[in-house]
Figure (cartoon, rainbow, N blue to C red):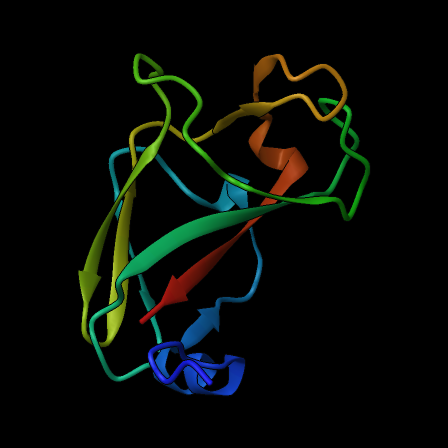
Length: 123
């Protein structure tokens, strides 16, 4: 038995996970700070966005979900996260995130009215 590795139960107990409710992407504005409280009682080690399609776009069907991953370091849309012990703060550079087309892999800029956003937090 290898005592140096943690089993799945120990990892779950050691790492907290929180997912915020989905909010329409069109509810956000660029260059404005948003605050999402989390119940993890410690500073997060990671935060990211999960997007859920509302209206077919870019090869995605309604209710398809994908993790937002910045696709281009020169893009003019994206966001920054600030970690706090009781919340995550984030700021959009511009609303509408660039993601990969589900079928072709080509980057496209989302239409905010067609997507919802949920914050994923690990602490």
